[in-house]
Image (cartoon, rainbow, N blue to C red; front, side):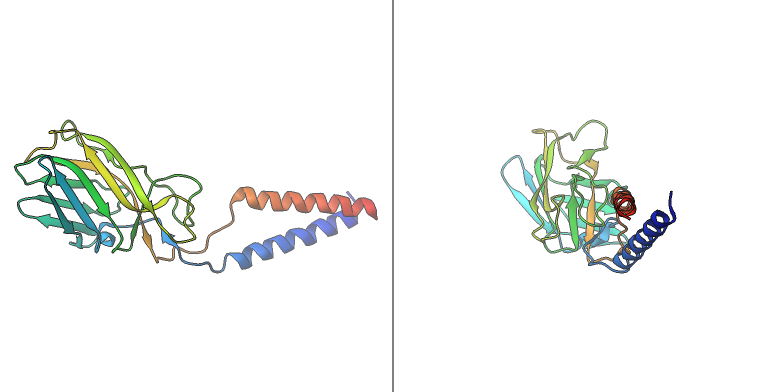
Length: 218
């Protein structure tokens, strides 16, 4: 290894480090991966019953970190803490059975993250649909995110709505459905986004290649 090679490679490596440092000093705030239940405030939950009736209720902030929607005679909904780690809970207070639950986050600071790749900046891991955690009835038959977030920075994993379907006549009065889900929060800066390790490695390897070529020409 010649002295010219060492000097050339060292210069390139130093330039890469400086560029990476400058690029991570700031970035546009897009979403934050850690969202709590109270960030759902302003969203709505619509419950449709087997007889064809439905009821829509706004979600509000309850205790710190908690999102709640209480509709006497219809249902109670709540999620407390991190929306990825905590159970979401819905209790049927109506004599009719629940068939469908629809969330619309349009009026809130939250987005559903379905966990698909590529992941929107700072979104990190998500979860596809609602994953049932209660044993036995009521049984989630299907669930899915819908209505993609229209922001240009959405890489395909952020949505403003979700639908949960239950088995027919399975979600009766007095029963509680619990599940795990995930939302991200809009407008929270989670700090500078570091370049992916693979990208950094490729930059260094490219520098090595350029240094070799440069050295051979001298």
